[in-house]
Length: 114
Length: 146
Image (cartoon, rainbow over all chains, first blue to last red; front, side, top):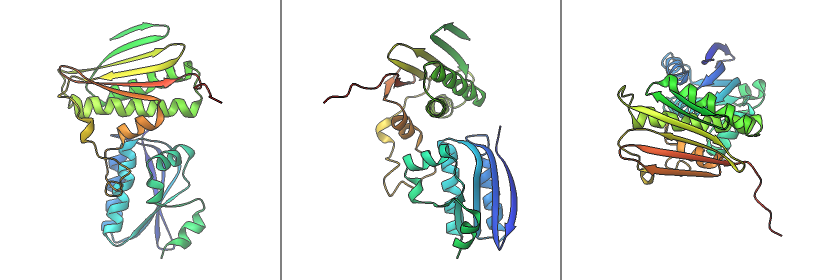
């Protein structure tokens, strides 16, 4: 299953509820496009909810980094919410867990935005 | 094209992204058949996908005249997966360390690192032309020395 997402806004934070795979040719470009579109519209607080992302590869990791950098360069913040074990394991292996602010609770994540 | 026995399969695949799925699915099936748990099998499938992407995208550059060969074999000791392309070769020394602070925010360059993190052995062999990546995951625990 390719990646799907629902966008919602809560307390000034744009939340993307992602589901499916983030891989080369199956969702990576969609995520990049969506995050850049959100930033272009002026939203600088973005929360990626990965609870239903059951698969990610190195291209998908690259897309997460690309989204993080795009938001940061625009003066905003991007955080991750609800990592599955598979995604968390890869972020640990690649040390990207030290880059991202990762939360396990949506309310706590929303409160963590400046 | 497929050449199979019970414990060995060789696939000759076109240089298209659809071939990546075939490699991934075959790798997961062999990993499960070899007795690895679901998490490990999923990781083996993922790095096989990485190897196939390397072969198709970076090796053969989607050239329809070039093919990717993928072999999967279960022995008593290990699951071995080999992916080869017909490209210009891969300089593994030129791939920067993805964990280095200056590289941590790079958007690419983690595929081979993940292979090395997940299986016991990763070997590269230069072909003429092309590159072969060999992934070996041992089936038995290494003996513990007192």
